[in-house]
Length: 410
Length: 146
Image (cartoon, rainbow over all chains, first blue to last red; front, side, top):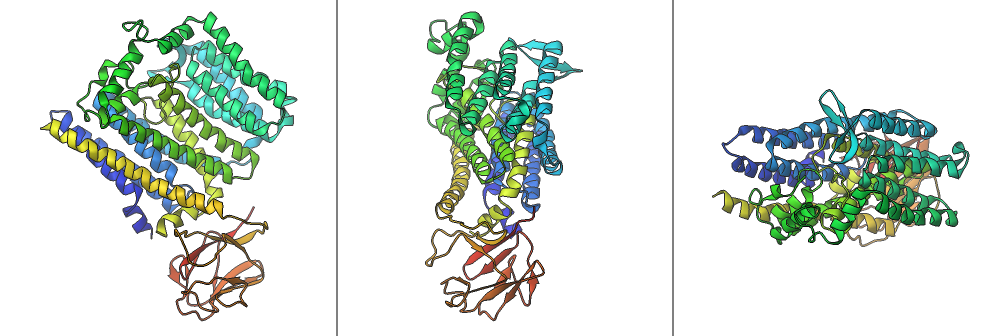
């Protein structure tokens, strides 16, 4: 049955997608460089091996990893096409990410009583924030990077996981944090640090996670509404005090007014999406390099240009399925802490996707944040794999054996 | 040359990504259907859970069955679990508890009982996560240990 399972079904489609993608890349980047084929084969081999382990060892939900693999494949191919250096780097990050995925899975199952360390998570998060300030370097207007002997690291990506664990620990034992106001204070300290780092996307993301979980678990409506409405004065205040918020907001309202300056990035992105049409101009035939930062924030526009709006919608749908799996896992868990962790991780990636895709298509003001699993960036990819490794571990108990049988039974 | 290749292959790419999505959404559909007719009232520790969800089965079946000391399965009315599948014999199989351990035994069925896709000959012990197949249906044996 396992043999049948591996040879048929989604993993096979994944293999063909990668085969075509890398075959085309090989022809695109001349002089015919066999490194690309090797990299592609390595990537696909790693995906299939990891998937095989997940199925064979009955590690719970099989689809999370499959969907991640397709997303990363699309990302790696686009990055390779933009710049082979980025592509190779991303593949090595992917390799590390997969190892950490399994490590996160094992460690999360191995250590018991994660819910007892609420204060530790807060401390971890805040220490990382302080370190970012002390050692941080300014990249693209935001002080959110630490440079350690040539490696750059974005601590906020790791803090995301601490933050989710912290909220979950509070939901499980509200009494440990004396009263609700201390909890709220700690949440706003997190958000304030992000605002001070000028990392607006992350600040919005953290607020979104907090308010959603608060809405789900707490019955005190007055406090919920006051937190919810607090967002408005904060937004208005930051608009009038911080110039970069103003810039972003104006570029959103009317990018055409200052097309050579503030609106340049967003208008180029819109041109790229429009150029793509329904089925795109074809891989390697577009000019996504006109968009600044195309390999991180704006990779979705590059996908839309070369694979068309159908390709773009396919990417959005992949995120939909991923998030659906997350919600389903969280619904099947009975224990509060684990349930909240699963929910928090799912919410993190759903909001993150919404914030950046909404930003590049000019639906909401643009805030710099990575598109999960597709954008170039080691920290983001690795923290994503750790987070979803934890989700995988959580899925293990809730659906033992069930999913294997569904595929096998067809 | 490359241009023509890229133009044609893009349709293939997009088609395949959608096919991938479709194959997963199909499973989601089956998933939601099973949530719909889920109705597990009691909270017993040991139970059988239906897992192979074909789109339709022409007989009534529940999502969960709790297990007692002796649980018999078959088409006959006298069985503890009555399943009107035409591939299931009147007295098909039974599950017995002995000192906390669960044993599966075929009681002379025509089409046989399968444990993890292998036909059983005599009494076998059940472990958590085992799949029991009989007739057109398959159950997951769940024994919660915590």
